Length: 354
Image (cartoon, rainbow, N blue to C red):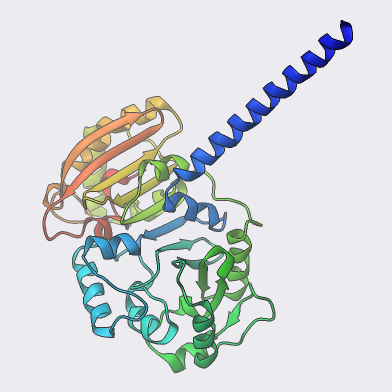
């Protein structure tokens, strides 16, 4: 009897362990399946990144009704980029000035890639492009050879271009000086610095440190067409009213004193949503700070825009402002013909001041 009870107990423990394991695996699968492309892209970026610029090129093409591929005529790509600029959907990208040459010479461009993440840090910058399943990787490699890039020994190594190669090609950003083709990850990485690109490749294949501190604002951004995402320290510098002239800075101090206390935020994201409205997401250290800043920053966002000129109401209508835990979100409906993301993703921006 004792032996039978022991066997029954062991079987019961095993069943419970299997159920728990299945539940954990199921939760992980569900979370992965429901992560956005933006969240996945940030996981692949170098961990020292401080400023990230996101463009969902597939969604932008769909939004503008552009049926394009790597084989589309050049003039259709030119028209698409012009429409994207007019809609303020390309300002986050590092590639607009290079789009034609990329399409014609390189075999990939905003007309054919899925998405782009431009990551910048004190150590360097990298452009990360995700390609569709049908991408012609052998064709892209052949084009790089013809353009004068020196092929790496390793499959995931760095193709060496540099200033001389880009000078011969003409019309492309320095960020294309060095290129890595990561076919297994469906990624192309480019940079103006070989050493930093090698660091970025390590991150993209899972050997680097992840970006930290941005999960909350990135999650709140949903699936944007384009976005500007900063660490708190970077945003406080890039959007600081200290960049304004003395008169505007003094006016900003007066407006902040009237609106109430503002606290430094830990992360910042401004994104263009699928309906082309914008969402601002700020994370704070405490719930109290988020609630307090919901009031003060809403007042600032509805008033004058020193350093920018005029009032913020000339650029957008302020919608819902909500504090949920340590997260503050603000909905902005742009006035027709304005360029809210491109205008307000660099400073000075009063309602984003620290």
